[in-house]
Image (cartoon, rainbow, N blue to C red; front, side, top):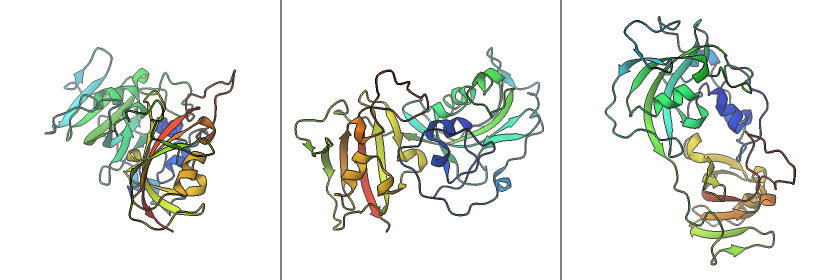
Length: 307
């Protein structure tokens, strides 16, 4: 299990507060759409203060020896890593130790530098922080002074986020490649089987288990979900490889498949909107942070039935 951490405010808006149930937040975000996999309730967690990071002495302004970019970003290289590749948005997640403060030294978000790193999608980080991380290699550690426009200043829908300049300290621990998009994500192939409900599926790997889950089953799974155009909507990799789920809380098509799987099975599912997160109705507004409406392709591996 990953250590509790302060999560980026934008990640709450993407997945919903319930998706971050194992973490603590510095600011309570507004309600958001439910994630693909509503997590099981978290156990008691350490106090938030245990995960705060004291601000650096120069939190209020960059020192004279800081590097400065034309866009207003200033940085200091604290440590140089030995990694080779840079993370690319849409191609990888990143494990980070980081902290973000307002210029008065008040911490808004981050992780504990002495604990487990947090795992993030670059698009869920503030623009300036994401841009900087995309230029780093594993082992790099930097302090950044971001103008408001590259932090949360221009994001009106982030109501509880700071609107002024911010200071960040970030260390790139690991780059995690995203699961590759299936070649048949646009439509189920001819050899796929279809159930009465309209769910199409292929068995990618047969497991050695003997027991099928029930609606009340809690299980550990590895999963990824794509839209038909190949966009990765969500993956268990973002939470640390394995995701704990309860079968009855899954989207209908996924739930249907799980009831017929055994430990070790890996299936690919083509779920129409009615068996995923819903169909887009004429004239309906698409919520920017809600789950995608319409068909969804799931790759699901049932790793272990917990109970």
